[in-house]
Length: 292
Image (cartoon, rainbow, N blue to C red; front, side):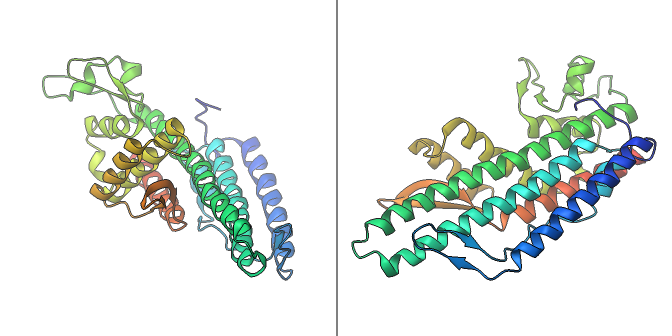
């Protein structure tokens, strides 16, 4: 719920709800682990898959970090749980379809089934990547708005001749991380650039590492391209994104080829632990800033 700013320590009801919710999550995890202990079995006709699957690398202390202290947010804790479950489900589906593609080589005499399954897998990779990036971007955006709201309580909008030109915005716009101030024109909408400009105006931007800023840029570059260009991006869109990825040294992206040219752009599995780690790093640093 946007705008809610109370902490877990000062709200006994929230603390009790958190305890109940964590017990529920533990029960679900117990059921999941028990179900995954069964041996894998696959049917070439249906592609059904059951068996163990790796857990996303998301630290357990996120509940404590996100529901207590200056950046307390019940919303963020729920978002994290949803992302964890989403990654788990989507990985299982990709593993299932990948296994079907591999096994189709053994029983598909014409090769047509293999070709169809391979194309389905390519689109599945993109669909999963876009669903996952949407969830991670939502977490990052919620956190940036939460940080901005807390900074407003701890800092005063700079003024004077040496103040950053962002200070020319109205009070509400100054503290809105979605807005990027321009010296002469109206502000643009850009959550990462706006958030970074806000921290710069307050003298806090250098406390966040270059790696964390690069990760935020990567998350929203892919999210925005996926949101506005669909699964099969126009050729100019694919070229622009891949050129940016090379320039920024983003190594988390794969591109399926068609006739030797980039076709479908997806995200590698190793991206997700790193993305969560960098977002957590931003939360930890800003937690200290707001607390201090």
